[in-house]
Image (cartoon, rainbow, N blue to C red; front, side, top):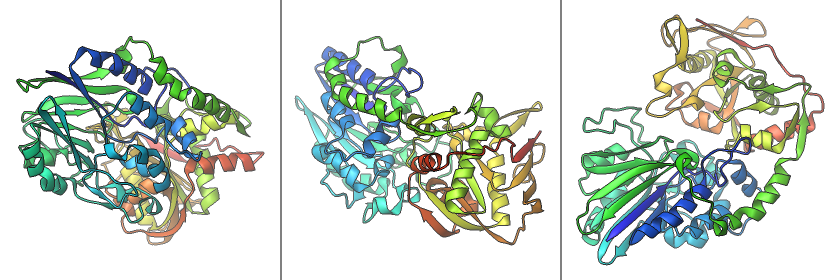
Length: 504
């Protein structure tokens, strides 16, 4: 028999083909409508989502504010008849109550081998029987979550090593299944070939390569988390990862008689099918409520601070970034502020709506204030400066921030001081000036810096913050902090002068 296997991952609640600014060829409606038609061409189908499903978009932010009994995003996937779900790291962003309300209705479909202490029952793996041909799907989630997540959101939850847990269940899977699929919310830390050369720090955030190296029982790895886009074979194992926000998805066709498989990543922008009306009906009501919510005005500026060129904004500074620093410094009373300008950022027009805030800041980050020395501040800025590289006297983004995945979010700018960077100097020796109130920053003195909980905790990237004392935690989402600031300040004095210079 011919079996179609479909996989999505990192959908981030993108349902409609839009980011609520422009129409975009992506999302659950387009993917689901295609699958519901395409599966008719095969004897059977298997559908798996590999996590980061219920957080990350304007829609998910809105839903998180409501006391939902069930999550319409999951209702949508159930309409498409998904067979298995894996939890992603962002599933925890809105807390365990929200996670539970979203998944408890389908807990029998949640495959989870390495997260202990969830408030609902899950299975480490599921065996699917297709006329006697059995496929074993084991669910694994990156164990790196405690490095980023708010402690309150993962209280009494334990994240076990994915490799150890696959080893624990390997023999059971081999005995029960004719084909083994690892459904992994995590990625690959080495090159996708036989050489397996490290392509990122081996922190164990992404252990796909380790699974390939250690076990010969795996037939397919359906991965996620990294927001990469690939499908290939590594040592005979099909390895796939769709692009985030429903831009691509995996399709594998298996002949159960011969075990031969064809595979492809389907680009949603190429799909011509009509939207399934029954599927869309699930979201019609919530979409109408969402529009009214998003159009609510919450603040006013004396001029537009929209972003025309995000690369130049990062290189030269921008009033929108200044405003974010202003907001973080205001709520924290810290000496300095660190922010990342996300790829989705478009800035603000004079009249600001809730939609504008959520488009620019869709992530559920909270804030932390750390005590660090002037020397550690310089180390952090030096790390940020590695984002840029000079080629023929032109500034480009360093490959370190582009491969194996795009990591623009790991470039920070800093507020509360003035600083200069010289790109003609060697990496990690580029910061030539740091001043606060026109005085040089004291390398030995302790200061406070406010930054996202993600940056404060993920010290594998910014080692300057490792073991830093946390002097304050602000456990409100940054989008809420921005909205409160805009609503509580009638006259906002925009800072248009940039506080840093990057020389080249």
